[in-house]
Length: 87
Image (cartoon, rainbow, N blue to C red):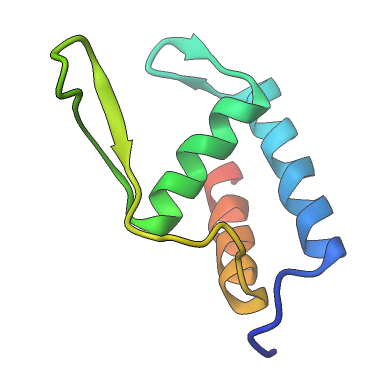
């Protein structure tokens, strides 16, 4: 593999996996849609964390990664982790 941006096949597989997770998984007592799962999975992959909102009325996500472009090896690892989560 190289450091090219994720392939179209990887991207399609990732989104299909997110759809499957959204249909099947109850998380903290709730079902969530594909977009929610994408946000949470990418937050975990990027090392993001939630911190208190400076206005005091909730939380915001602190992004430790500045690019949203997953490289092929990173996407391959993420797909492997999602496969294990699904199992």
